[in-house]
Every structure is written in C-alpha cells, then in structure tokens.
Image 1: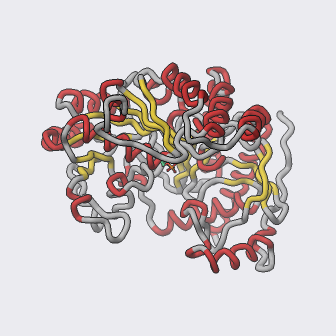
Image 2: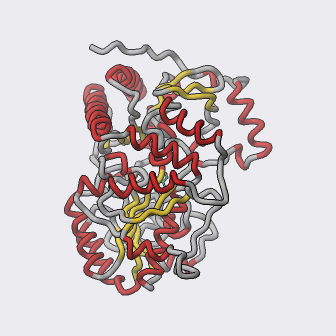
Length: 452
Ligand SMILES: Cc1ncc(COP(=O)(O)O)c(C=O)c1O
C-alpha cells in the first residue's frame, strides 16, 4: 500500500475573521460581488489562494489541499513545475511582450500541428473564449453562412453565440429533437438566439436531422467530445461519426472544442475517436498555466486569417496573442506531456473513478462518475447521465453534491463546486489514496445525513 499523506482539517478560511473572509469583504468593495471570475466563487466566499507546489495548493490561511482542480484542468503538471517555471522565467527576463512576433510561437504551433491530425495551421489567442469566437468567425467567412450549431448545455466560453442554451431548464428547453435557443445572459440579442441552432448531445439521429434541415444556413457545428457542463460524459463514437458525416455532406464545418479534451489523448480526443474536425479550438494545458487559446485546422479554412494579400477575410489582432512567455511555458509543458505521461495519467484517472464509484456503492448513497482519461465529474445521482437532460440534478441531488464538495474542501481536497476534477502529473498512488480516503469519509458522512 502506498504511503499516504494524512489530510488534516482545512477550514481555517471558514472563520469569519480568517484572512480569506477579510479579503472577501475588501473584494466586495471593488469587485462586483467580490468576484472577477464566476467559476471561482463559492458561497459564502472562497478560500483565497496563496501558492501552489506540485499537487498542493496553499491558501492564505495556511491550509494545504490536494489540488484536484488544477485551475480548471489547465495545470497538467500541477503547480510551479520546475521546467515550466524556469522556461517562463528565462523568457520573462528577456522581455514580457513585443510589438513583433517571436520565434516561440512557431515552435508551439509546430508541436500542435504535429500532435493534432486535423490541424495544419494555428492561430493563438489569450483565452479559449476568444479562440471559439475566432473559429466561428472563420467558419462564417469560409462558408458564407451565418448560423452556428451547438449542443445543449455545452460550455465554450463567454462568446454570446456559444453561450446559448448553456443552462436550459425543463421549463424552457423545448423538445429533445429540437432544443430551444435559450439566452444565458440577460440582454442577449434575439438575433443571436435566432442564429444558433441547438442540438441534443449524444443523440445522433435528431441532431443530424436538425443539422440537415438547417444546413444551408449553418456555417459550423461546434462540439466538445467530452463536454464538462453537459456532464463530462464522453461522446459515443457513433454520435461523433454521424455528426462528422452529416456536416461534411453539407459543407458545414465541424469545430472540435478541445480546450479541455486535449488532455485525454496524445493526439487529443480527435485522435482517440479517429475523427477529423475542420477546426479545433484549444486552450488551458497548451499555455503551461498562462492565459492562452488557439484555433487551428485546415489550411484552406485558416487562410481566412492570412494577411499577406491585404485585409484578410477575418482580420484578427490581439495585443497579447502568442505572447512569448505563454508560448515558452506552453512549449515546456507540452514537451513534458509525452505519451508515457498521458498513459500514466489515464491509468490513475481510471482508478480514481473506480474508487469513487466503489465508495458510493459501499455506502449505499446514490452517486455516479463520468469522465475520461485524467478527468472526472461526480454526479449525485444513481443514474448514469448520457446527455444534458439526464445529468440535470433535482434540488435534493444538488444539495448532496454541495455537501460532498464542501466536505472535501474542508478536509484537504479541492474539486469544483460542480464536482469536476482532474489529475496532474506530480500525482501518484499516494495522492490517489489520500483523495479516496477523504472521499469515502465524505460519502459516509452523507449516509449519516441521509439516515438522520
Ligand atoms: C470546453 C471549453 N471551451 C472553452 C472554454 C473557454 O476558455 P477560457 O476560459 O480560456 O476562455 C472553456 C473554459 O473552461 C472550456 O471548458
């Protein structure tokens, strides 16, 4: 049995006089709701991060937690990996950014082109959201069509079109075969809703029928093969094949959003499934922990960005695009992420999901796990979710998940409030064992709660 670090209570932040509590009070004076990034908000307030080292994150109140969230799956090598930190610091000492391109962007683009079968040319951005926006604009310019197809519940960042039907509910989601276009942000123009065709994830027949009906107006369909917000259930191979075939048959571009799923295979999810999208959107792990995004794909489509012959079809600027610190850190991180590192992560991920399933079964508490490779998501339900609608939780289930996540947070383990988590390469059997100990205790506490 691997030696396991024992995890102590980690709830100093919860004291109303903790540094985290005081920071949050100050934050509310200058940030709306004390918050600058919705994902990091937790009620009533989050612990504030001070530093990270490998698998561990230390908060400003001195508590250490095993970080199974890794900045929402971005830090595939955990915190402050020496090779990544040294590469970034070396580059930073030579200047942070320039009004000229740097050689590093060619290196990182080459690595991506080498790894991703469907990517011939790459363009960098500062976030996955921007990359999604540029992919959609590229598809529109290339096809001369306007509409975007997207799957119900799927998250692709903060671009208005990509946000449609992100949080549909039974009262407004409409029929499964033709999900309604539901605004996410108040004030979304009705034209945006009209130009988004919402599709049911993992339902090949109705999805393809709707794509066929709309094909003449559809520029692209955007698809995340392992969509976290849908429920992190991997797409079935038949579904992906059907969507690829129908889009190809009608000249609709298929955009794979691999911002998260790139970590499920050395050649991304597209390599695992053997599907060639026309465009691929990347982010998170390719920046080595720094802000990043990229859109890549077929050279003929990517030519919409080519400025050599005057103003391109899709002009694309960005003060910090391909900035050399991100490029250098990303290159170091991606080089470390070889096929063996991914194989090891996948194996650990499988064990972790199995261990969590066993905890639920042993305790007789309804719960299931989705995910792939080094990604997992905890569902507080006995059913195995297969699409957005089956993953939706009722209030009792949501409350159970919140208690589980809070128990983990207070006992040395960080996952997202929605139950999303992932592994990083510094983790091994010991970290897994510690996690599973705490998880089993969280589920046992839930059983007591249920019988109280
Ligand atoms: C699948 C997916 N696409 C796009 C994005 C947007 O990326 P960013 O947060 O870098 O804008 C995210 C972010 O979590 C994501 O998970």
